[in-house]
Length: 86
Image 1 (cartoon, rainbow, N blue to C red):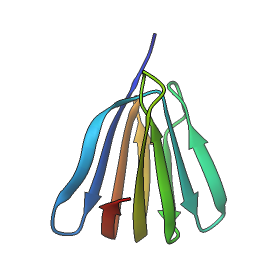
Image 2: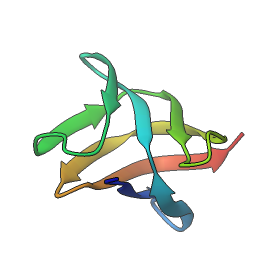
Image 3: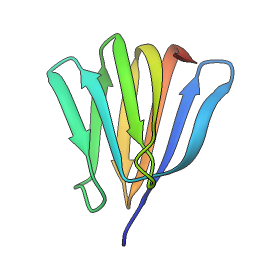
């Protein structure tokens, strides 16, 4: 089964990184869900919650303020001006 390699990074530190089965984030065009095999994507983040669903079903939530989201080859990178786990 394919997995996503996810990194959530603030301007000055790494907030969380690991493997996941799904990522949901708020962009300026609306909420987006990312699953393994997603097409390459670059999106502008809007302030809001980022939800990362781990392979076991648990979830990690972070509050991210502005930045961008990048998806390529099952790697999701979320870079925000400010971000913290909630």
